[in-house]
Amino acid sequence: QSALTQPASVSASPGQSITISCTGTSSDVGSYNLVSWYQQHPGKAPKLIISEVSKRPSGVSNRFSGSKSGNTASLTISGLQAEDEADYYCCSYAGSTTRVFGGGTKLTVL
Amino acid sequence: QLQLQESGPGLVKPSETLSLTCTVSGGSISSSSYYWGWIRQPPAKGLEWIGLIFYSGSTYYTPSLKSRVTMSVDTSKNQFSLSLSSVTAADTAVYYCARLISGSGSAFDYWGQGTLVTVSP
Image (tube, each protein chain N blue to C red):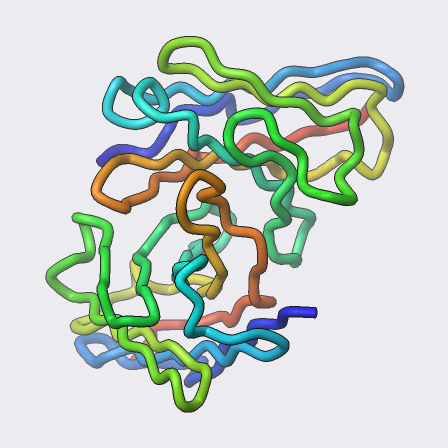
């Protein structure tokens, strides 16, 4: 069970859009629509922002959206704001009730 | 509002056993709608899923830690616990407990604040 692959960092200016990829295998991301995304600010616990590939929990901005194609899931943040600067992690169901996280992506808002 | 709170020693000696408890308030741990999990994060590194436990006591562990991990649940106290044996410096991390929506939801929707455990002589 290997960690999902995410880019180490992404950056963009306020108002722009970014997409973070999360690549797994046919044993996890590719086989289940059970990818979730988490936002983590420094020193804080992760916060759920996307579940089941593309569902936003109540209270999460509609600037956050998720999708999946094959073994790769993606998180898109539109209209970047300074408060979006954080680390982002994907997580996938990997069969037999197990889970696997991605390595994390640091988003810098320039 | 559901709250989770980790507790346990912040310092553990190498080769000893790390023991943490997560106390759940504002909701019952004995719900068939949720699993309860542990996730850790070494300093300046990413999240690592450790395992899940159901209120019935069924457990699921990550393969890399399976030989050293034991999770248990105490429904009378609304708590669940983590034990990690034979720890080394590589087990130094912030340990989070979290609630996982079971079934199709399958996401960690509530998290504790995390507790730093340092493994050092």
